[in-house]
Image 1 (cartoon, rainbow, N blue to C red):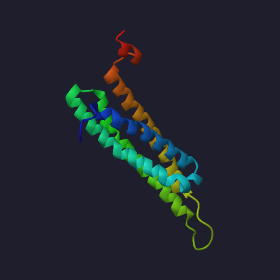
Image 2: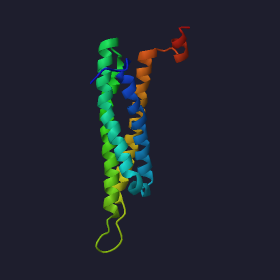
Image 3: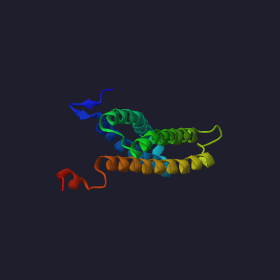
Image 4: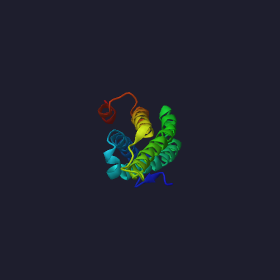
Amino acid sequence: MPDSVNGLPLHPLVVHAVVVLLPLAALGVVALAVRPAWRGRFGWLVVLVAALATAAVPLATQSGESLERRVGDPGRHAELGDQLLWFALPLLAVAVALVWLQRRADRPTGAGPAAGPGVPGVVVAVLAVVVAAANLVQVYRVGDSGAKAVWGDLPAATAEHGD
């Protein structure tokens, strides 16, 4: 993997895919958990966004390791970034589980209308909200530690102008 694109480090570019897609997937999972009627219409879209976000996490960590070799150890940011995949994978799993449970519930039984989500559906929905919240918190923690690694405790405007 190249470490730069047009002279810019690849890491800040790739990180934006994670910073946008993972929270978007988390919010989509929450929406599917609290609005089961949306699972049939938007479920696979949420799964796709969660899969893309999950795939972007290793790219961000690999490009971060390349950048680390050039500029030095970012400290806690690298540790937290390495943990992010273990948040993204369960988010992808609960997104798939919500869609799968909905498809299963929508299938008509032989004796009448389709069965409702039942206890497993409620348990997965609650778990999905917890996993989504954990992802949002972890993305914030990784991003905050990255900003502090770059800017320290200075506001960006102060650091930019050297005041």
